[in-house]
Amino acid sequence: MQTQNDFFRNQAEQFEITGKIVSTDAYGSGHINDTVLVVAETGDGQKRYILQKVNSNVFKKPEQVLSNIEKVTAFLKVRANSEREVLSLIPTKDGNTHIKDENGNLWRMYNFIEDSVCLDTVESKQDFYECAYAFGKFQRDLRHFPAETLYETIPNFHNTPIRFGAFLSAVSADKCGRAKNVKDEIDFITERQDFYSVLIDAEAKGDLPVRVTHNDTKSNNVMLDKNTRKALCVIDLDTIMPGYSVTDFGDAIRFGASTAAEDEKDLDKVHFSLDLFKAYTEGYLAGCDGKLKPTEIMLMPEGSKMMTIECGMRFLTDYLNGDTYFKIAYSDHNLVRARTQLKLVKEMEEQWDDMKAVVRQYANIKD
Ligand code: ADP
Ligand code: GN1
Ligand code: MG
Image (cartoon, rainbow, N blue to C red; front, side, top):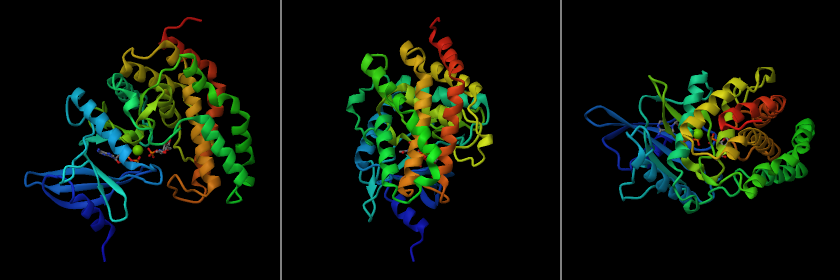
């Protein structure tokens, strides 16, 4: 019988790798893709690759995901100093960016970023600064990339009013009879509905430009050098699309400026850290190197709260719909995740003036 690892090997063998494959094992802790570490023996040491199945439940047009990645990585490669600074697609033996397996799923392969770490939980302010620097630099390097040439691979991905609409539909459908367990959370999200269009309104006013954005700026999507802990490379490029710099900023804050994991069950451990917010603001703006507008910088607190409450409503929507989107490890996992996000939103609101003061200082705006 074919094992899972044999199946992975069959996919891996279709790519242009150096050497003979010696292992193919499941790898990483992402919520979306299936990731496989491929190790090959070259005769001159081992070489490693990352093989991934693109999640076709999440990405309805996976070819468009590959097209975006191909364009962006080619653009970044010209600006990189070494192969550890950018993901490169390993071509298939017949010169394509991907293969399709017998079930119609699409697979692609990347160079492995050697001697690096990525952090599921930020361990220090300095590490968080480095993650911020990496995403800021990513923004800076891509500022002349024509955003309109990218596919919107998940339509309205960070359109919070539309996410709120999907949430309300899940509440009224209540497919799994779970709405009764989460009345307080439903109220919390509903009470804040006037906030959800703030960024879209700012774009309409000309305060918030549309840029090329990463859209999944968790700390575990940045590789840091294992020894120096300096930022090396931004990974997980599937959601690159046109978007706002402040949602990239805010998604990183919601994940990294928390004192606990995204799925911490004990809410007493979950706090929003203003210190980490400061460190990320500093690192992100240093990486962007003066390329953001002052009005845009001033919206970073709104971006942070928006991404946190949006993620909370996405987790809760999935919980209500019966856990069909995010991978879960146990039955209430999405509810636990939603609760941490709502707790962070509450604490951001309590520290709102301080968050505004931090960005005002960096945007060089006087009272
Ligand atoms: P997901 O969308 O599921 O989060 P990722 O692309 O982030 O998938 O990959 C999952 C994990 O695999 C990452 O958090 C990282 O640990 C590891 N990883 C992914 N790409 C690479 C790479 N090119 N080099 C080294 N490790 C990688
Ligand atoms: C997913 O793929 P991963 O685990 O980096 C999700 C993000 C969420 C995140 C929550 C394509 O990211 O939008 O913020 O989980 N990615 C997609 O942890 O939906
Ligand atoms: Mg990831």
